[in-house]
Length: 613
Image 1 (cartoon, rainbow, N blue to C red):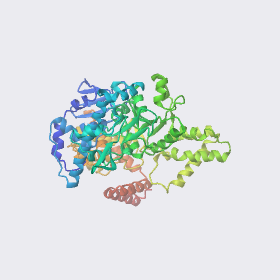
Image 2 (tube, rainbow, N blue to C red):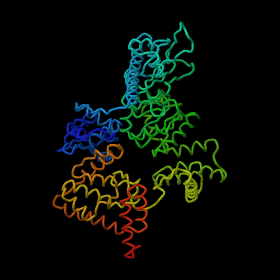
Image 3 (cartoon, rainbow, N blue to C red):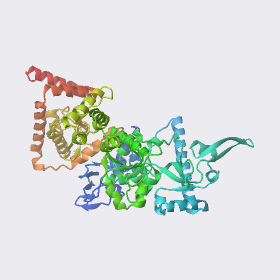
Image 4 (cartoon, rainbow, N blue to C red):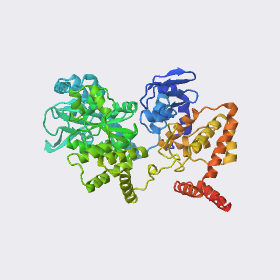
């Protein structure tokens, strides 16, 4: 988000937008007292735990602990950045969005992008109309009917058909003022090398093929895939990459699956177009597929925006197994939980659903194996380890994947799994894996692996009462400190005069959570417009604020509660060892907080003078 949007405009959009009306476009809400309640759109649940507060203009889910304001709601449910959410909200409110003065180069790119979208919309409509309404599309319609694809599914995925002739799309586009050169530029036509009557010839890229429109998360076509009706080659033909379309950054079916992924809590990652369509038609609306290439890091990051878990459902042949192994490693690197769907009775999900019921497919989804178990089974298939060196080598092959797992509990589970499977002691397995971790520590990008440590303190990977903890100022933060910081903010929200008392007794450098400090400093205005350049931080601040608002406070006990919170923070600060303070000072220095680091250094000096260790 650029800081060129006036703060006054952002506040006007907030003022003109009712969060209840906005959320009601996505969630059925029912009034319960002063609030509104409904089924959370961000996770699967049967009992409503999603609340909207019209007075504070915030939402919060007590199930998945997601919360925020009007902008964070749109950012999450539509997968938008702040600027896009602001613009969408302004449009809904009927406010003219202020335009930024663009450079000549930016204006040219903007015009080209708009033309790209317009041409692809024309093309998608043409292919779709040919399939459903024109004689040339009957063979394509017959093929899809034989594959069990009905009209509703055709419309949901905007399927089409490219007639088996050289200039079908060219002629259609010419009638809409689109030149052959533009179609070539965006990969929809091909320029011939042969000259005829001093004119260059052009012909359609897609001919005699079922057309799969590749849609972005807003259902806008950005590319196409084409499949032949027989066994001729190439079986599939895809749009080439352009300045506005990159295969490795998009996923087929994401326009349809984004809500289903949130509702089910995981994404079902498949290999092909037909697999995705067949699975969605069967009611599993969380399925997506990579676009004819191996899964990329960007696609894994895209999936992570919607869920923390991915189930891989690739083909069961050797090529599919190898592709699943590569995809699983990439997904693990992004911190996702990865499981694998095993369909021994079929080549792929589409084939399975042709011969089995939806209930049987659901049963298979409930019997998935973790990626590490899947990789182990793939490695030992046909060649079970017998000698001790073979077993050691197997552990070394699985160790990098096990070390990517953040949860210490999960990691120990995998270590125990290997111990039982290989007939080795748990201690030996753990020693081998930890030895490899030490060897590779200096060879990879240096990141602190909190899950390797065992400590009773709260760490980044922990949750407190279901609330996700992020952006620590320190590696170790006691639960009491987290709760005290939240309660201090809650009390100041109700009693703004408490802010001066907090500053007087604790100063402003005691905060152990960056977002808590930001919220406190913004009180009582609650204006966070200066942080809208960082979408992730803005969402985190709004989510934490929504969580804090849900804390209950008795007015008669507010003074006493504030005193207890301050005392809790002071007590923890006094208990902190010199060594821990030195580590905190170094982290503050790395984070660029030199004032905070200096304050810690001064306190270390005072303690040393008093003879404390």
